[in-house]
Amino acid sequence: MSELYYVGMDVHKKTIAACIKKAGGEVIAEQTIAANRVDLGEWAARIERPWIGALEATLFSGWIYDFLNPYAKELKVAHPAMLKAIGASKKKDDKIDASMIADLLRCNLLPECYMAPSWIRELRRMLRYRNLMVWQAVRMKNKMSGLLMEVGAQYDKKSLHGMKYFGELLESVQDVPESVLAMLKMSRSSMEMFDTIQKKLIKTLRCDPRLSGRLKALMTLKGVGEVTALTWALEIGEAERFSSIKRAVSYCGLCAALSRSAGKDHRGPISKQRNKHLQTVLIEAAKLAPRWDESLKEVHEREIARGNRNRATLAVARKIVARLLAIDKRHTLELLDGKAKKK
Image: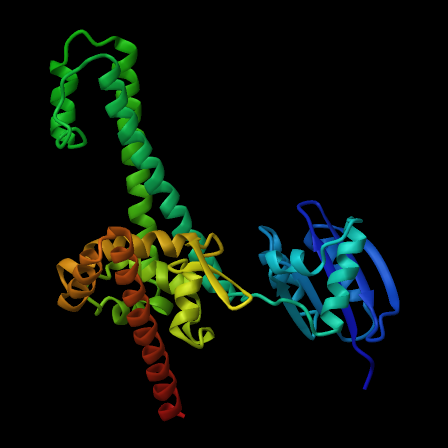
């Protein structure tokens, strides 16, 4: 059996610095490769022995991971924050970083992070783009209100974004410059465009056969709607990777940072190391869920009685995470049992 090579890669937008080492640490090759599929394929094909690779998680890591996976015996993605803590050094350049990643890999010290399957990453990209469209539509709504307030126009805040009322407002409003009317029309058309796009994206995601069963199971939970279920499924990926509810709660950013030293615990504010997309959606769901679920209402009221409304919302959000994780894992087990019976 041939000896394995260990390959560390420092990934950038235009270039990739690669360092190939033996198990003992001997450097076989160091090279800077253009970050495109042709050059990367030629480089990977020239590696003589089976190899295990590692690269840092960045914006560009997804396509590189998918492209190199068939060439490597195993490919890992490193957690960037933990990697910086381990590999902090006075000297820093691309070659040193690639060499450090290769060393961590061959010594089995690489802080590995989860890499979702390519189809989940593709759908997740669509969902995040949909969230951007919603945000842009809200911006346009706020801009319309701001333009009317700037020129002192009277309007009904609740009815402003209705098509019929908006048309009547443009015809009846007085002492408003033509430029403002033109900008109001442009803002309205932009808002409608963004809203149409986000609805099409949601429909595409909802109808995907790889997600439909999972979404149906998640939406059996009271207070969990379509967007919350989609965000959970695509941001979590595979629920089995969380061995406990605490880990899932931490990933969602629903717990405080903890500093423990000399037998003393210090709790800070909510940790910034989290999935911000999940955190936002779960907080919004936690504000509404107590209206439909009595047990969640009890949790909310108990925390409110202690005098902190924000902590009450977090407590409800943590309960929702626990339930979503349980439903998700049960659904996965049912799928596996069904496949086993078919065999």
